[in-house]
Image (cartoon, rainbow, N blue to C red; front, side):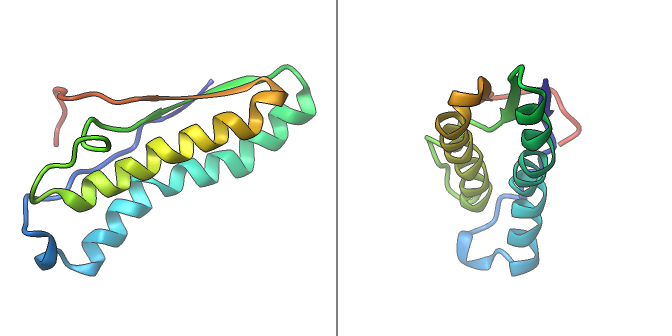
Length: 109
């Protein structure tokens, strides 16, 4: 089982004032690990032939965007959409992809 749990949130800021570096950081940390884990682990699981499971952490901000953290919601929307797409693509290989969309959690963020 693979768990893509890395994630960061942005400081509440009007969307037009968010710096490009902050946007890039959200995508790099919240989305890119899904790409990398798929690229490395899916070939291994397919070769092994026993299937597998990926759990990706999204957020309720994906289906329900909130003001001033729009770009965070965008990154988590990408997690949700990616998870659905990979689930369909790799179902024939018995590789499951699921997303968890927590609303609130006790974290250092």
